[in-house]
Amino acid sequence: NIVGNELNTLFNETHIALNASRMQGSSGLNMRFFEVPASGTLFLTDNAPELTEHFKPDTDLVLFKDTDELQTKLKWLLNQPDLISFIAETGHKLILDNHQYSEIAKLFTAQFLDINNSRSNQ
View: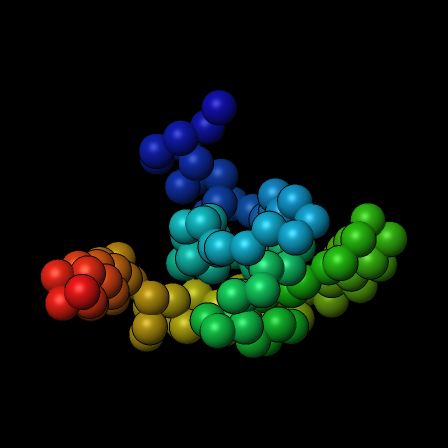
């Protein structure tokens, strides 16, 4: 297990971070989808239904659908260091501009209050 400052250092020294956590048919985004691009690292990940609500594939991060496509995209990226830098920078800017913890906390609080108010009015 790598956590805290050690994990941040690893992300900062890595050019591509691989994520393969989706179970077929699952949904939802964990914080990894936001934390890796926030570190300035290109995020190569399996897909989630909600992902395109927050990110543009091949602009802010890179998606793969299976192990064959993972291998193809990883080879493609490793042969294009300028593209790795471009996507990593674009994802980083997206997070800084739109998805900082303070903004996410406001969104979650507003959603919680909406749910709570709708239950109170029933």
